[in-house]
Image (cartoon, rainbow, N blue to C red):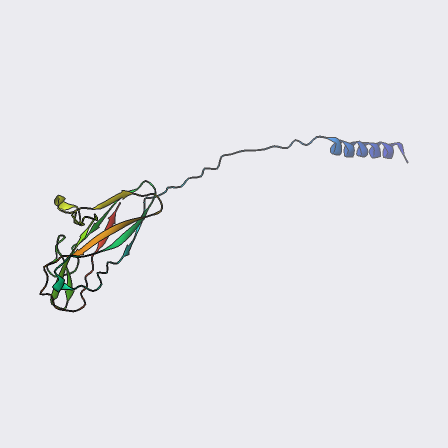
Length: 169
């Protein structure tokens, strides 16, 4: 092998070793990834119907029962549940009306077991709202109902009404 060839082979070998033996100069770059979310105030409402069952109006006594609402709101969300007067002709918040055709049977809804605070829309202090603060789980509230005595002239039959319930938050 000629001197030139030996020198080229030696130089190639040195270059090859230099490439293998040289340390890597790795580079890095960093950045922050932003993460965000907004938890909104939300509420859901379910109801448990009020069923008075059979009423003997000739006994001339109050007939009491209960129903309920269940409100699930985002934790920390203040809420109020109101009730309208119902669909019965001539109904008010204090005296709601179940109908059977043109026949009527009066009843009332309350927020307390003593049946002294009428459940309504809170207007003018004559009726109360049901109020609480959400916990993120269902909050059950009892609705107390009464068909008052003194309705001895009501004809036999099936009576019904529908009351609108609204949760404001």
